[in-house]
Length: 434
Image 1 (cartoon, rainbow, N blue to C red):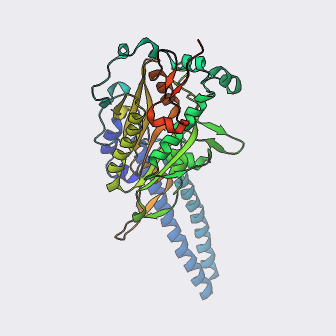
Image 2: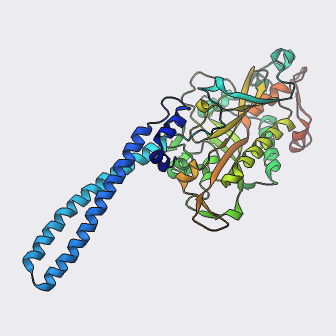
């Protein structure tokens, strides 16, 4: 969440910065007003406490001197002030709770380097791969312009019908070599990050405070799966548990950057997506993903962000998937992010660019929520870390693009060379019987 001192010291600058996200991004005036009310109530409460303490001293002195009447009068005054203190304390607590709730719902300040814009149409394409650019759908032969849900059904790789039978719409079931390819992609990515990232297998269900730490709660509760009986939430991304691994901890600067990676299932209600992109794997409630997460100092963050983008695009190039890198405009940023690069691959069968990774730098926004700090090497007070996260990669749409782009004229699907060792040397998925 935001540092309330920024609002206190320069509310106009915070308002202008948040306005880049959209006209309804936040009520900075209400934040400032609540902050003033909290500080005023605490100030009055502390003044009363000091007076009560002084009265207690005077009561003791009066009793010691034998002046019972004065002692009783002072006690009566102290009791009245005690009631006023309790009222001020209740006022301060209520205002603090409202202030914290509003801060938890207020998005991060966009980076000055983030492009201006209102929505996805204003995102900036930084580069494409291959460098020659996107040739257009017509550059793909007809047999590659078949959607993955048809290919998957034809080859027995994907069974959306049985997935829906088991769990409802927008739940996928992979079968045979389709399931094996999903597992291979995960191993391929984890091995690619093993040089610098510690592999973690976190729990899939987490506590409310763990979801709050990343910004997924309280604002986006409707998008998450909640196990109410146990007070647990199904993670929408491994970012959630990884961000809380150091919650309330102070780490040494020498241990930063701390890089973590995890392969997990991810769960999202997609509550606002009814009727949109629901064919095949374009939008599903459960999907597998390999996540990258970094705790860093402010000086390390930019290099870590660039390295995460390099790693994710390197995987895409190894898989021979055409992609583009988008610099998200301020109006399209996720709430926790200051700067985000999205990676999209082109799927000729679905005829659309599919987002397969969002790589975000969050500054100290998440660390302030989860109280993760580091101890500077040269001494001094602990400082909030900065956090970065990104998918490398999310597999449902990668799987879709792979089977569409690699479909051959006989209906078989070629396996990219980089993935073949993870499939026992398999070079292609056989086509349908003729």
